[in-house]
Length: 582
Image (cartoon, rainbow, N blue to C red; front, side):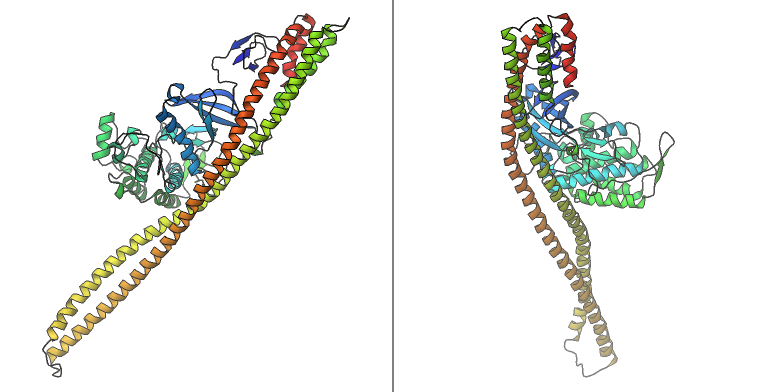
């Protein structure tokens, strides 16, 4: 990729001068800047880098919106395990499709081996920057944790475990009524049914937020994410991690030491929230909440108890902290913006018209050189061909983007219905646990009531009951009272068992509906991927043709520009061709 020192225009290929103004072309420091990926994404600038690769801001020409593109580091692109783990992020996020999980819209590999993910462009701050300022206001911390729990609930229901929940992987978007959470980086996610790409017993994750089972290298389930969520919530409430030290010390503390209750660090943490954090940080997965939906409901209850909490910010202004409900909030639809289709062709059409008008000014006394007329004709043919190819590319890219948005919208709707059913499942399981305790207690009461009645019946054996002496009457009275207790106890047991059967029937019905929705979601994802693969391949082919045609246009324009730049009085007009198409 080359850039013009005069006008800043960028060109691929090997032109020696700028076809816009004749300026000298120099290599760009980052060859990806200005490059078009998959015929749709023009890379604007670099915004970050990490161990797995580099992230750029790009512009999606068809929809007129910015996106983020993450490229796998080139030294890792040829390692099958690294490549699989990198692309796993796209599959995991696409499987979930939740408002509070970053939206990955596209992924693939370029002809020269660049592996990439296309994500929504986020304008905001990572959670770790906010935590670094100190303990967060309780309503704000609860709001953030609630959104995280809601997103993890959907992920876990669809058999995706993040395995690296930490503040660095949580983003808070700007421009919303309160914090709007996005969970990032599913590169370490585990998905049920996926072929293992890591060694058994390997330890992955971040030590400060690692569950005990994860630290041991044991298989992890949803409870591992809940433990990490507990660490994040602890840190938001107190400004401190539940455990600190070197990596070996952290591992031992996660395995053995109970966490100090948050309320002992910040006294204003309410009892219910204190208890929830400690449950999340339980050493045994079985002692943690049953699901992320249960955590979300517990956080909602804490929020309701503090609904009217008013807090004062550092600038002494008063803020009302509110919780955003992901089932009601919708993000702005960038697809409503007008596409910029035709701008490339428009620029070259304007330049061609300028070149044609300069012929008479360059050669006022006689006919123009034959080669110049032929070159202009050839350039016109190339621009016309570029226009047709660009139109075809736009149509294919638009179809791919529309198909992506449609499929994502359907998955979002099914996901919301799945969330509602799964929240009901969590409620029924909670009620069922209480009813099972009632059944157990009622069974115990029946046994306790039946024991003395049996003893009394045994005492009646061999007695002549027609002799109603005082002892016999007393015995019969006690037996009657005992029988009444047994009847009452058995009635209580029957009621508890009926409630248990009713809840189990409701649970079976909910799980059947959940299974149906999950099956529909899986089928929809598979079908849309098949359709999108075809559209993406067509787009890639057209993009290659457009780039080759554009290289040819630049090549044809170069001698024309060189000719006109020989005339001092025409140089400014040649340079203005860039402004004409801007």
